[in-house]
Amino acid sequence: MDTYTHGHAEPVLQSHRWRTAANSAAYLLPSLRPGLDLLDVGCGPGTITVDLAALVAPGRVVGLDVSPDPLAEARGLAERAGVAVTFEVGDAYALAEPDDAFDVVHAHQVLQHLTDPVAALRELARVCRPGGVIAVRDVDYAATTWFPADPGLDRWLSLYSKVARRNAAEPDAGRRLLSWARAAGLRDVVPSTSSWCFATPADRQWWGESWAGRATASAFAEQAVSYGLADADELAGIAAAWLRWAAADEGWLGMLHGELLIRVP
View (cartoon, helix red, strand yellow):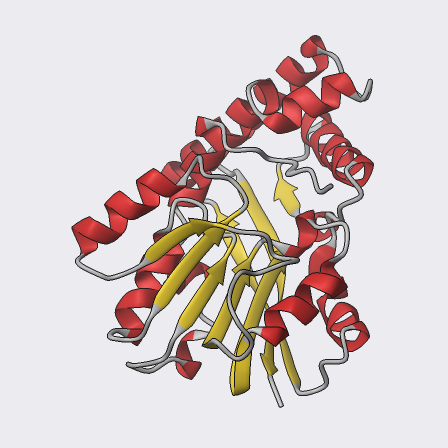
């Protein structure tokens, strides 16, 4: 059974709410048009889903998440935006939809958390119509870089990778997406990369406080302790490092993401 490394604590959802189609799915947007049916797997609080729904309306849009926890918030967001989206709990390995149900299947930051991303890609392809597109995007944690240097952030990156791999997940998924698509038998693939950059005072404060919170009060923190990989004092030190970085006038952080647009035959 898969274990979601982040969980759905408030500091995690704080991060997820920042995501939009513009900053997290720009590579997909040229493929969208009104009337397409779209499935968003791993929708979380629905910020990307609602943006995508506005672009494909009046097409049918379904947002799925493995947990019911963020879905009430997602439904409220869709209602306020005036777009029609159905939000449901679902399993990326066993989607409830029939074959060829959607023109677009989107999964943002999902495959990195799965024990069998190849099987999930095959399932996404099953529900995608011939000629439709699968869009996947995942971070590559090992390629994350920042300034100024801080041993606490070095420890954060090492610890995060250890926790994720203890969960049989892949924190450096971005560089592996193409290989997973090939293993799933998907050949018509356009790979790309994009990045997030946090360097303005507002962005640093938001991102630093989010990760400081995750370091001490999230599933990641709980797993780090239960797996014997860190203790509360060490996690508090990581949180302090994030706050130091956020307060630094010269603070800068970049996160690289791999992306694939996969055309289904």
